[in-house]
Image (tube, rainbow, N blue to C red):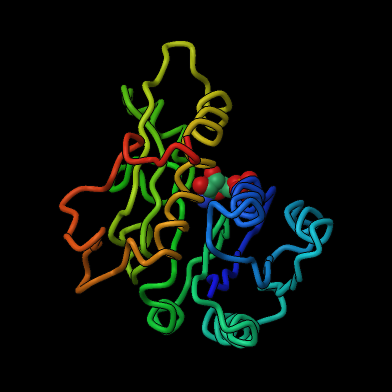
Length: 220
Ligand code: GRF
């Protein structure tokens, strides 16, 4: 049975598109059962509708607090019985009950070499800090913001002429759009799992995230 994947977005949805393509061409043994956005104007919604993927807008403005929003979000998601919930540029901090409910099937992509630069403005912060390397990380989500066990992390060298915009673009194209579909392919296949707070990959615990060299040919 292919994995039922729910994708949560707030914006452009480039990661969503990469995931959808990988499902459509069979690289991920899964199908996107719903795309949920907290912002009605998210461009990714238009893409999902064009692809015939079911979409739901759930605006955080309609809820008094995080707890009630997350309860409503869980209700929407659970109608689709997701095996995997993929956060793809979903700009919301999730409450502990939400995280607990989807533990082991909740993934996020973060545009930095975690644990460096959790939170926002990662590309600017990498430049300000003079980092020589930067990148992106796919990790299981835990209660700690951007702190869950990492599955795969892609690195690139920061160039002297990089700006926040060029760095964001290179991290997206050279790393994010490759590592997220790959991580989902592994999860859907059962190659990767959250086990006792650590990542198990093909039967052994990882003590560091996998790198770009672990990408299968179809994901490079
Ligand atoms: C990506 O950089 C992702 O890592 C971050 O938000 C951005 C979303 O971009 N969390 P998109 O919506 O996938 O185009």
